[in-house]
Image (cartoon, rainbow, N blue to C red; front, side):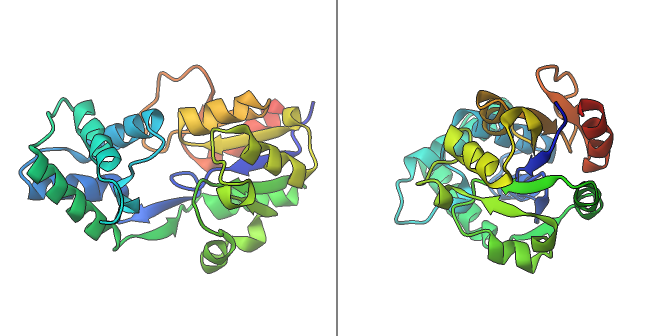
Length: 236
């Protein structure tokens, strides 16, 4: 059955952080004498994202429970074989992470606009499926992406349910008016994007921008959105 709709994840699919999250994480660790490379930080972030539903340091505030955020940071370090610091240091690092993350902004990848324009010219329905807990339209408008997407779905649209749960994918299907087998979902995380899309019958495509998953066989894999048009043609 031909592909009629393509959905996209947000972070590390359409946009990146500036400063990039793994770069900032490595810098904070260095401030505290923890020798974590940028690539190991990236691997650790992916590992933590796969295993935990919460705990991202950029979302922490002093009013929130610290434990889940500490566990997240310790999981990032564990991927590089680094034992967790003592609790006092860990809490200080968490506060510093949160402070530094206030500096970040979103930057659109260079391959996004040409790819979305190609899809639009070919008549595909194009949607964003994001776990960002906020209305996406103002952000998309600021970054010049509103006119290249037909819709954006976030947990705010489905009673707080984010990827990998089914409702957010089903809402994207409803808005696009296509069957699951007529849709692709492109994202960078195996669990939330890959498993989530497949669970409702959507074909997942993993974008591996940092080439961490070269041995991936479970899903279609691309390293740039520039590779997506050829894949769409093949799958159609």
